[in-house]
Image (cartoon, rainbow, N blue to C red; front, top):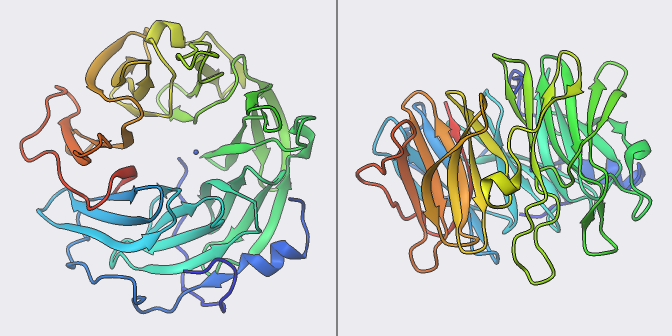
Amino acid sequence: MTDNTSTVRTRGSAAPGKSRLSKKSAAWAGAALLCLSACTTSDEKDPAPDTEKGILFALTSDYKTGSYSVVGIDSAFIANQIAPIHSDAVVRYLGGNDIFIINRLPRNNLQIVDRHNLHTVLEVGFPSLSNPQDVELNDSLLYVAFYGTDKIGIYHQGEGAPKGEIDLSAYADSSDKLPETSDLLFVGDTLYALTQNLDTKNGFVPLTAHLLKIDITTRKVTQALELPYGNPAGMTYDPASGKLYIPCRGLYSNPDYSVKADGGIVVVDLSKFTIGDTLATEADLGGNVNQAILYKGSLYMDVGADAAEKIVAISVADGMARDIVDLNPYSVGGMAIDAKTSTLYLGDRKKGAERLRIFDADTFQEKEGSKLDLGMPPVDMVVVR
């Protein structure tokens, strides 16, 4: 699938929004519209039509090629390597019919898969070197975060047409003049953005990171918070408390390549837009933190240590962590939780035994029939219901 050539295909009614990793030029308009025919491409298989129930949608990659596979949650359905994707990609599901595959540098596009037939129905191309990182959805508009530009791009969900942008240049660092926007999150109609501010000219050293509060009506940043740690890895919102949890990694390692535990999990009270106490530090947890999933009062997270990676559940009440499972270093290939069935899905990239592993999210016990082969090593996944 190419990135920057095609004709416009209208997809019909856009899926409803759901609240919930270069500068403007002719390139934005020229590269923004890509789409595919309504039928299956020659690279796509016809999966069994059992996707009306809950599914796990998993990206797989050997870092040379990529594809996506699907596993039934409420059925025995499984389909491996349905269609190709970029070898460096992440996936998002924001409700409705669309599953969003963010194909990062150098593909630079958004691949939209219909959850019912699992076929790609639209591609939205972005400018060369834009390096998309995250997507959010509100009122049929897609908001896209980029590493390689100082803007948030806005596109129509139905046909991918560009609909404007949000300028973040005021929060760029002096090294490369880019804010390195990594994550987006809607809470109601307010958009929040994380800027990592990495010194890309000097080994990606983390500079001052920000949490930005954005008014999507005016398309302006209304407030900004400087985060106490660098290199934020994502945002997890707890609607019960109105708090936002931001794991920040800081530097990954020391000069001897051992893990540098200089980050922590920042707590933000969104009602006041103020930073509270750190929930847990990397020193407390024994390794680098990563993006978290909130489930029953705990943040489920991959913590990377020197000798192993571990999946833990961190209580948002007191910051105490319970171990779920240990894996080999650098072998976590995505994680998702299905709250309806209390199931934790975990990608294990252990060389020679690359599998999808399935756990009871309450007891941490691995389930019978776990360790499913997805055709290639898993890298990211989402639950689709």
